Image 1 (tube, rainbow, N blue to C red):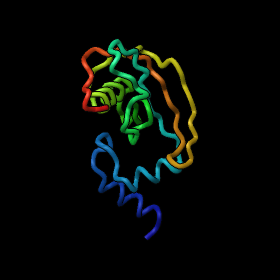
Image 2 (cartoon, one colour):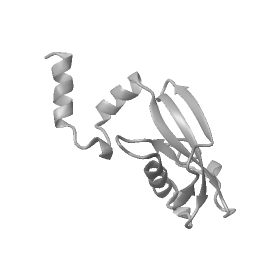
Image 3 (cartoon, one colour):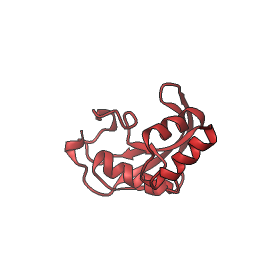
Image 4 (tube, helix red, strand yellow):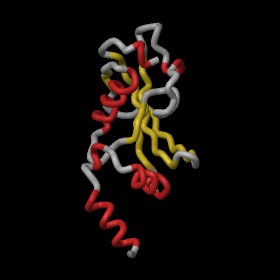
Length: 128
């Protein structure tokens, strides 16, 4: 087998990439190309909410965020991250307030877009 044949087989057997990639494919991609992610800077009106208090840091650190998936809009990723990570809905500004390049060699190379957001629903305290 050649590398070209291997790649053709992977692509032929891959489900819809918008639903996530097989781990092996994701690991390869993150090793050879920068990934774009959004991070949510949430202006909290509820004193119980503090992004720094997040205990589950496996999804991107101390603030909600995630990698933009294939053909996904920034707004869709913002909405999904808010629901998944804090159990709430948010309203975000239309453009990021900051752009950062993160070269974390253990996890990969990221282009991070930081969006200011406001809560539009109650958070799920069970997420913290």
